[in-house]
Length: 215
View 1: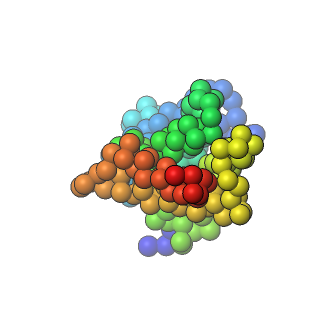
View 2: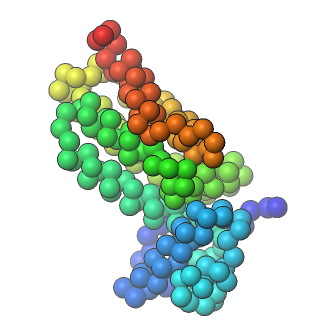
């Protein structure tokens, strides 16, 4: 089935969510969408059920969002912004580049197989190969995580804790790809490694790259 056109998730200056009441109503739809997608996946989401959970009419829901795919993207962007803000707050509470890197990894990985943001990511990934707008939004969101990682690496180099990577961009791309792969292991219904174990595996790779020969 050909995917519906998608409106990229961007802040709105005018329109239905430009007022305080409109923004609150829109966030009720987003939270209802998070719950439904986490429970059953985007393909099983029905606008009527989404409206019921948000306490509004189907027409009101579609007033804020143009399609089911648009709901998915806006919901992903909303949740990911919350996650990155929480990660930055968590990083501010620890000192030392190695401890910050470990905290970053732990925040990046899903807490459980039902982690809402990761389920949204998986739904979006399935659509990215066939939809350029989905792919572009995902790249914009992922860039924020790579930038946070690059800042930790730069801090570690300044502190003398890390050996500078040959190319920081290559390292952040490679390392977040590793974390994505570990996350998929955590999201499986069977044989879910603990987040602590996956964090340890990622730290082993980080030490090999950022402190070669230290042991």
